[in-house]
Length: 292
Length: 131
Image 1 (cartoon, chains in turn red, blue):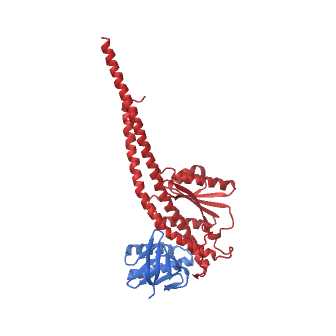
Image 2 (tube, each protein chain N blue to C red; image 1 turned 120 degrees about the horizontal axis):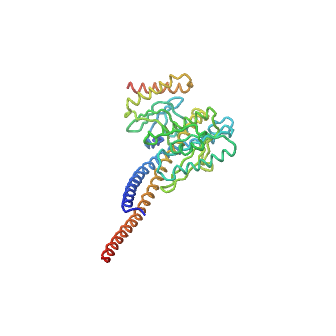
């Protein structure tokens, strides 16, 4: 049975924790709005880029001469996985969801006897993966310094991937991130970026095949595909940051509520033991008086 | 003069949309290219240079590093990651880009194509600076 003093201290400490989680929730809500706005603003670029590539790749008739970034190397031996996570914790299941998804994928690949290379973006992902997959992690990138997500950071990752691809260090490249659905649910995603997977293959949108290309189609594709990689990564980073804030908001909201419940429970316990102590004292006084 | 739509999009946001453009001159990789209404569908990409946007009342000038251009249904879309309005551009930014480009040029193992693009970049920026 904790003493009255202990209980009082506990109540104060839970209350101050509640204040912190409440403040974090509000900060996350404000940041979420901004992150969502950014994600929306970034959408036209990647959509347009996708469209152009779709139009271009529709014109590629001979897969032999097509750029390798589009059709792959023809081998399936080495997989590069880029895992995008956050740099900060206290955001609920945000990071663990991505890691879980990624680990499933890693196991599948290793079972098939293919080799695995991992690039982690964000320190949380690195921390969680280094114990089990430390040997496979070839690069750990973190953008703790940059306040907002910007395209240059994404381009840095993109260029790194392309460089490795050109040195034939891997055949497949996949990225892992959380797609923002709404504040409560974020869905971990696996997206293959090399070779390019066409999401809208069944799209019936009329393709204008009578484009004039300057210079030739191949050259444009060669110029465009590396940019597309950076764009896809940038898009994933934007989605991820919105998800992170959404996840943190929900987690902190829950924490605030739990702290409230705990304070209620402790207060009842405190009052009960206070009353018990008073009753005990009264009994002592009465029985003392009676014995006189 | 006949008008068409122009949209300039950067990864972060939609940079500019205009519906009263009359002529746009873009620094395509094989040379400057003027685009008027009813141009045939076109896809090309850019080298460092100046984009001139001419509409009835005003002319806008932008510096771009690179980009992709698509013209379709009388809409010109320019996707670019690095774009500055010439009226607002900061001399320090120009200096920094030039310096970075010169650094890269000093390396020995760069490809001819990259060298060409970097040379272009420095030339264009120097001409902006001297104006």
